[in-house]
Image 1 (cartoon, one colour):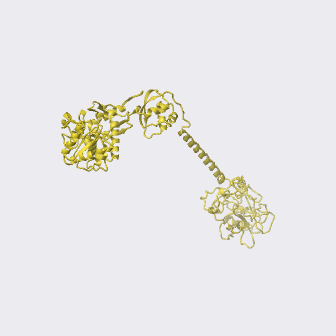
Image 2: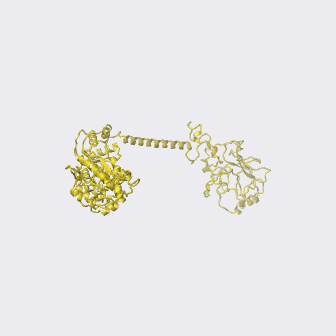
Image 3: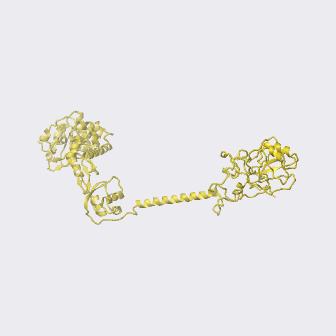
Length: 619
């Protein structure tokens, strides 16, 4: 018979140890799966309460017995004998980890009557046990207040039923709830109920991870061979292995969805699902304005054309552009319903371009008639011609008059005038020539025809400032002049010199005359206000008294006299070394001769007369 055998020992009168195992009905279901183990079984969990009576002991004693520890392990076995002076029963428990605060004590239902407990009104002992009852009788647990009465009523060592008179004299108290000797009594023994297993502390650093278990994946039910009891813990958390397996499955599913979404987006971006519809016409019909932004991808251009109805599909245009010359940024006047190849051919030329102009070096804002009888269009006329377009939906563009009005009446802020030119522009309010020179020479590819005159001028002036800054107008200027005066001198160089090699020398002549307070007397300044531009200046243009004519006024003209390019600007910023005060162009090829004295200059003019390039002042 094992120490835990609950078999009744009634009829035995010896003084051997007596053990009692009581179990309330509510706990029987939980104990159904408990496995009975022997005293020496190392797998025994918890402590075993034993009531032991021996002659050598002063008083019946309740002890806690635990299995003998295995060699080399920590001893969780301890026996304490309660002295008779202790007022209450004490149980020694193995050390446990700090847990949550104990729940409030709940009344325990009395156990079902059994053969070992015939007295239904027995109470749980809270004081010392006075004596041992004969074998075959259940041990009635009494309170500390009833101990004296029980001793006086039954002095005989043999137990006898208590007389009725003694029971009547005993004070009546509410029956205390009984409890199983194996479970914790709330508030006295422990903090956890019997259904909550308490295990010795485990050093987690010495435990191997679950994924290193060699039995993983062998059909284990998730609890392992070393689990507590024969089955899973009631009310416990999901086993770690099963939980990890579900986490891996969820992560794998999410990763698969992400991969499929990325693959679908990539195929869509490559145009795998795009339509390849294409038109057959090479001319189409109607008209639509199309804008190709700067640095736009060919797919974006194809989508824009497809949305506007120019081509049948984006994919058809992309396929045609792979063997085509490419498409430049800007605005296009395109017909609708044409093939992708025809669209590529049209956009490769200049005929369909809108808002594109090329400003030559030295070009003025106003158109100017030359001595040959043809008119050279000015910047305003070029802008008006490049932006005027009529489509199926609307009419776009500005006129020369609108540009002149915007240049003359708009504020410097509205025109985007740089700070270094603001004073001169404000001074000439009402004259459109006040912004002369603020529009740089070069190609302007994408003037927006949907803008009004003021917005177009503002865009050109602000972008020209960026060009001038890149050309060194505000840094590396060795001319000794302000940025605005430097721009004015560079515009005169553009009007006087024809060969780039002569630009630094012409700039030096202008600077030398300014240093000597000598009038510049440049033909280009007089031609700026003349109705007809002439190489051999004379007559009304020569005698016209205006602030741009340097034959009549000292110093620089009121504003620059034309658009400035990077070559003239660099030459003005870095003029050649020399003491020249005069120069003259002697032929149609642009050959220019320089002189330090006026006599030498007159000789050089005779060379131009012999070449029939000049007629005024010839001998």
